[in-house]
Image 1: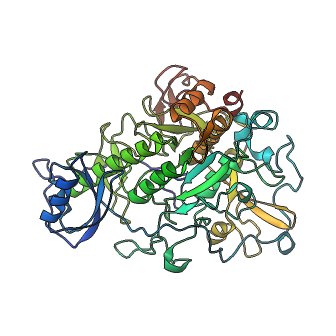
Image 2 (image 1 turned 90 degrees about the vertical axis):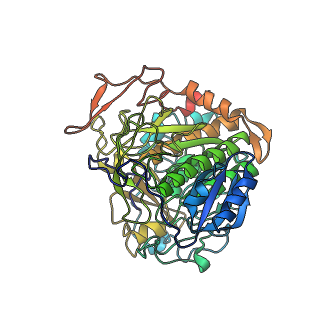
Image 3 (image 1 turned 45 degrees about the vertical axis):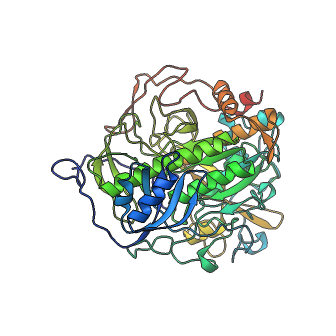
Amino acid sequence: MKARGRLAGALVSLALLGAVGATAAGTPSPAPAGPAGVYLVFYADGDRAVALKAVADAGGTVDGRDDRLGYLIARTGSPERIGASPAVVGVTPDRRIGAVARAGERPASSSPSASSSPSSSGSRSGSGASGGDPLSGRQWDMAMIGATPTGSYAKVRGSHKVLVGIIDTGVDGDHPDIAPNFNRALSRNFVTDQPKDSNGKKFDGACEYKSCKDPADVDDDGHGTHVASTIGSPLNGIGVAGVAPGVSLVNLRAGTDSGYFFLKPTMDALTYAGDVGIDVVNMSFYVDPWTFNCTANPQDTRAQQLEQRGIITGMRRALDYARKRGVTLITAIGNSGTDLGRPARDTASPDYPLGAERDRKVDNSCVNVPAELDGVISVSAVGPSGRKAVYSDYGIEQTDIAAPGGDMFDGGTPLKGARREILAAAPYRALRAGGLVDAHGKPDDSAVVRECHGGRCAYYQYLEGTSMAAPHVTGVAALIISRYGRPGKGGLYMDPAKVEKLLYASAVEKSCPSPRAAKYGAGETQLCEGGKAKNGFYGHGIVNAFRAVG
């Protein structure tokens, strides 16, 4: 899996380098018309007709539109000319996507059977030491938040009527610890694999399916399956158990095989979630290609400014659309170890096409999307000792709540190595492709665990990141809806504002460290601001499943 942005384990260093890209006057020079491309043209409320005229005046054509979110799909070589219209609020390239794929075509390979594989690397007992599943003893994260047989499991395990959307790289719907809760009928894939980027560099690699369209029950990366497992792996006598082991898991794939999340697939996933009655979505990513989106950074070209405005506008509208229809929105805050209230440099953008990154100055007017948008619950990560993880972003205005995300460098625990990270389900195919298991199914990496039961083996992987923290909060939100929701579209309904209120009220408050300037290794200091009830490291506290359903 590519370590980047907000995906598991990614640590983006914002080094102090020089700025590039502005004219002497500080205003980007307009670019001449280029080859025609496809763009999302976002128009101001009530200005669709004016935006249509702007596209026509620029010599472009309109291929489609989405009136729900207020944008046109235009083919043009002059996006800056279109963006000059006062009716247009953003113009963003539409990276390659295709028709929605449903679950259907089966993967070419699956997990080895127990009879064809060496003995399991994990426990073979029918239940864990604490009465959970066989690998529950390795899930320090569940113990931390009270998701145990004597905790929340004894009160609420989650209703199958609660639909949890995983907006990610996909979900392996055939994994033995996913399949019982996987909603194949509602799952969708909103992306098409792209073997190479626009410059011909390897991107997603060779397509595994006809038309480069994966079915909606496949995850060639592994990130989305890990997230889904933490939320809702069932209590079924194998492997691990999730926070809400009784809920329904719906794959809303918006991420590419290589782990990129572009604007249109992400908006499509959110609007679909709102339309079909999804109760809560997990978003462990940021929208590419910009880590920080600035509306008027003088170091960016005019086209880049319009692109970032389009990302902010489009995501704002998609998030609002979903939330107004009952979708609780939960996201990972990010893995740069950055105070999002005081960003200074962005050296990781734009990350597409590959190798396009450059250093630029940024400030608090630039936002990480979706973590810094309204209506979204942003989650920071803690290690097994409860200390904020070194990689986790933070900020007094940005951090809403904290959850276990793992931290290899957390020395305040007897756990060693990968055991300090989060264990959850992993697709065999992704592990095999990454060289983490051999041809016989034996793990080749200490971060991979195999557990065999009933003649079939399943695989699990230790990962860390705010990507791993967010699904703990998503799982607790699903428990809250299971307990307090009322009948509604899709099964149950609960006002996202009420879900958010209960999440914060039931969290375990945690004060800033003393001294507030926490030291992480040689020369790295991160400042925690705020009081015990709300601060930049832990928000309203560490999420707690037992308290939330009590």
